[in-house]
Each structure stands twice: as structure tokens, then as C-alpha cells.
Image 1 (cartoon, rainbow, N blue to C red):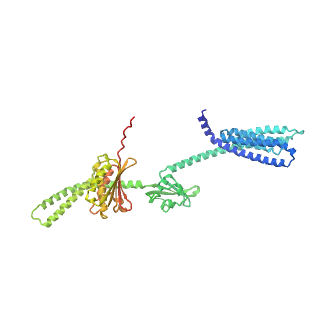
Image 2 (image 1 turned 90 degrees about the vertical axis):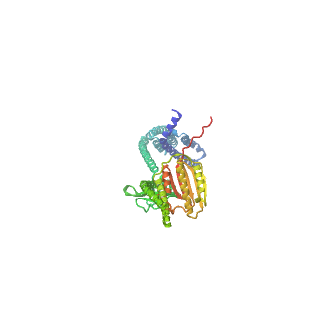
Image 3 (image 1 turned 60 degrees about the vertical axis):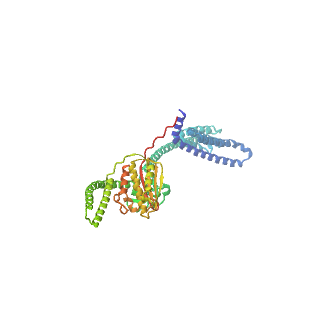
Length: 543
């Protein structure tokens, strides 16, 4: 057997060895206490004798010293070589029999008050090694007892009744202690098996509870938190140690007053606004005993946002189909009307008032034609022509053009353009940036015309890049947040409500996202996330 195999075998035997080691330690300590009591008693007795009688106690002191050294030797073996516990148990039984035989031989042999120590040696053997230990203790004890008693130098013989009584007591003790030790061992094995099963069930339960993606919170009958799994810690933003023992209403506000099932908006410990779906149920044991309640909850924020996006996409798809047909139907009569008005305006003899009215009709027809064109662009967007685009360079070019626009005359345009390569349509990216910059300028103008815009682009982990336009205008009203990218929704006088909706359609066609959020106490920030171009391998190192 190799050293590794021997080590593996030792590890496998450890569960069976540890109880034996514990029993050996306790019995050895008991023996040391007994020997110490014997030593103190001997010292007290010898202290009252004459000096000439002290020589009679030297063998007793020698026996006590031998018991001490043997006990300490057993403890040393157990500390350094625990795998030798079986042999140490055998040595322990030998020491017990030797101690009993020595004391009986020195204190009157058959009339000694220490004859009971033979019985204790048998019991020790049974405790340590079961039936085998009881048998070993019995054999050693009978041999030592007969040697000590039958070798007694007395002229009269030991009464047969006393001899057989002692022998019978030893045999009966060995039988009974061996049986009890075997029953105890069997019961211990069954208990260990049950403990192992319970540990496995507990570990399985713990793994299941900790592995589920839903949060699980349990409270006792007084309504105080007793458990929170890992998913619950992640959703709540608090560890179990921080919530254990606290009222459940402080951890999940409003849940104690809600129904058995429901959905609620909630702000977690990190300050995040989340939508939680939850289900409450009582914890009952055998006989209907109430142990408290449990709450299973899930973060439905992304799911509800996805559902809202799907519904919006469905509405926009339906609207787009209707809009495409309607735009075509409007365009033809609109062109006829505009052409007819132009011909009429060229007629001679028109009054000045008629010419003014025709000019208004022509102007409004042109505006309506522009609206129909933008409507068609929204309802039937061109498929993106994907290419690797230097987003920082393109954003810088758009910013240069925008800075020269009269609408940006009183606006400070700041740029934070980090190197970023996107996989997108460059023309459509220009359209996105231009519309966002124009919207930001119009928002600032609504508050007086002076302000600042921040144009930022930066890479993101996971193969994404983001482009942001932030302004210090009036910001976004909470009631308008959910309607920003809906067609024909606008807060600007004369706005068509198609600019942000078109941006949303373009970004979705690229597989990205566009979001709007407040920027500090005032202002708004629009963030466009688009796929980044895959990183190109660097030049090979010289070898």
C-alpha cells in the first residue's frame, strides 16, 4: 500500500476512530483521578505511621507511579498517533487489570476492599472494545484474580463460596456489559445513520432554498425575520445577518398588510425602484401548529419592462401599418391640392386677400407634406447598413455641425468622447445624434435659451457601447416618462412627436436600447446602447 493509499484509508477510518479516542481519553482521565485519590489516601495513612513502617508503602507508591506513567503514555499515543487507538485500548485494559491486581495483592488479597476494581476493568474493556473488550477484560481479570488470590500465603484455604461468587460476578459483568456495549454500538450506528440522513436532507434543503432564483423570507409567529435566502439578499440589497430578528415590515414594507398574492412597487436598500411579485403562506407543523409565515418574492422589473416594450412594439407595428397606408392616401390628394392652389395663385386679377390665403394654404401643404414624409420614415424605416463605425469621430463631426447651428448659439456643448467602435449604420447614427442634440437644445430654449449639453460616448463591458446626450433643461416629468418614445407624443409647441419614436425604431433595428432618465436635480439624459464591433487581434509578437 502506498503512502497516499494509507492516508486515504486513515481518513476513511476516522469516523469510527474518533468515538474510541474520546472514550479512551475519558476513561484514562477517570483512572488518573482514581489513582490520585489513592495517592492522597496513602499519603494521609502513611503520615500517621511510624517511620519504620513506611517501607511497606513503597510498592504501593511504585504501583501508583506506574499507573500515572501508563496513563500519560496512552494519552501521548492518542495525541500523536490517533490511528493506534485500538492498540491503546488493549493497553488500557491491561493497565486496569494490572492496577486492580496490584492493589488487591497489596491490600489483603481475597479480603481486599479493591476486588471491585476487577469488575471495573471488565466494564472498561466492554466500553472501549465492545464484546471483544469484555471478553479480553474477563480473561485477564480471571487470570490476575486467580494468581493473586490462589497465591495467598495463608494456611487456611479461601472459602469456595467467596471464590465462586467473585468469579460469577466477573463473568456476569462481562456478559452484561458486553451485551449493553453491543446494544449501545448498534444504537450509535443507527443514530449516526439517521444523523447522516438528516444532514443530507438538510444539505439538500439548503441547496434547494439557496439555489432558487426567487427570494424566500420566513418570519416567526411574532413577525420577526428568521431566514432570507441568497436571491432574497440580492433583491433586497441586505444580508441575512442584517435582517435576522427584525420585523418583516421593516425588510419588505407593505407585505404584512397585503393579500396572499400580489405585486407591489418597492425601493430596496440600494435605492433601486423594483417591481416585486410575491406570495405569502403560513408555516404549519404537525397538528396545525403555527410556526410563522413565509414570503416568496421575485423581481419583476425587467419582465414588466419587457412586457411594456412588447405591447408598445405591437401598438407601433399596428400604427405603422395604418400610417403607411394613410400616408400614401394623403400624399396623392395633397399633391393635387397643392398643385391646384399654385395654379390658382398664378392667375391674374386675384385680390391681395386671396393671394394671402393661397400662400397660407401652400405653406401648410408643404408642412403637411413634410409631416407625411417623416411619418413614412417612421412607419417604414430603412434597414440598417451595418459597418464598423468610429463613434467618437462621428459624434465629433455631428457636434461640430451642431455647434454652428443658430439653435445652439447660446448653448455650451461639452464633449467626452472615448475611443469606441460600434457595429451600426453610420447615417442612422448621425440621425440619432442630431435628433437628440436638437431635442436637448429645444428643451434648454424652453427655459430661456441658455444652458449646456454634454455629448458622451464610451465602451461598456460585455461587447456594448453607449452614446449619451445630457442637458440641463427642465427635465422629464414623471408622468411623461413612459410615453416619451410613443409616436405623436410631444411636450413642445409645434412638435410632431415622431423624433424620439423614430430614434427608438432605429435603435431597435440595431438590436440596441435607448433610455431616458433625469440628470441630477434638473435636466435629462438620453442613453443609446449599441453593439460594439468585435475586438481585432493585435499584431503578433516577434519571436
